[in-house]
Image (cartoon, rainbow, N blue to C red; front, side, top):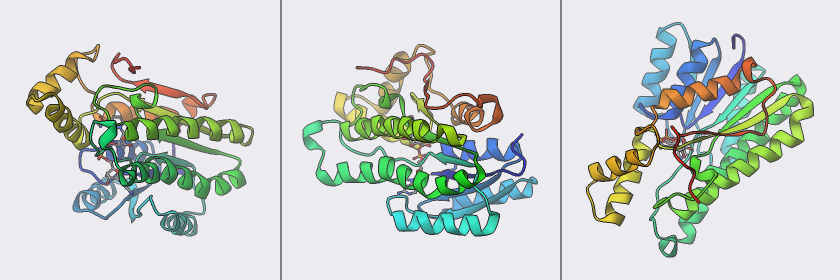
Length: 263
Ligand SMILES: NC(=O)c1ccc[n+]([C@@H]2O[C@H](COP(=O)([O-])OP(=O)(O)OC[C@H]3O[C@@H](n4cnc5c(N)ncnc54)[C@H](O)[C@@H]3O)[C@@H](O)[C@H]2O)c1
């Protein structure tokens, strides 16, 4: 289905993250995957080894997406090697902060803006010229249910950055639709990854409960009474990356097991 297509997935370096799950799904459909993360960790290199050992095609690249120069250099290398970029998945993101608005420093605001918003925008800016040449391209951003509404104990800087990602998606979708470049954003609720573990620690500290209790309380707030697995989010990203979603652009799709997006 994606044979001959080149896909970039940012934030694919964790062994149990959403980025890795997305990369595996895209590769299984025949895409060549470029897995990007802030460092070439052992987990990232192990994913690459597994993919290539199983007949898939993948390479790893180190890139701090808070640094636009690094993004531009990375895209240059990819274009030199493959002459095309068909799919960009802006998945990398950071959440860490404190739940109280008054305690969030400028540095924390800057970090979430630089990674979650400007990093994704800079990656779009770097790949869109080649997509325009091809008259074809797909961008899928990974925001959060917090990009659709504020959720208890989620830091304001994270929520604001994810709202911005939804806005970025819609602006790009509108501007490039006539060039056959689609741009959509997925809005996961709670997903079982390291990032969730950190969020549970934050909620536990705020509510003075254990992390297990925090997780049980969160599960209860989800209509399906459980978090998603990374592969379930990856399935939606795969759908939005391929021909079955050929008439969908500018959509912000919740994937949250019926969890409400909050205020
Ligand atoms: N886990 C959840 O519950 C959840 C819910 C909604 C949305 N999301 C979003 O899904 C995406 C993936 O999250 P995850 O849960 O797999 O988290 P994760 O922490 O496992 O993965 C995030 C990845 O982004 C990378 N990254 C961070 N800063 C970077 C930078 N400056 N340059 C390059 N890479 C960088 C990290 O190294 C990591 O590999 C994030 O954007 C997150 O906000 C997660």
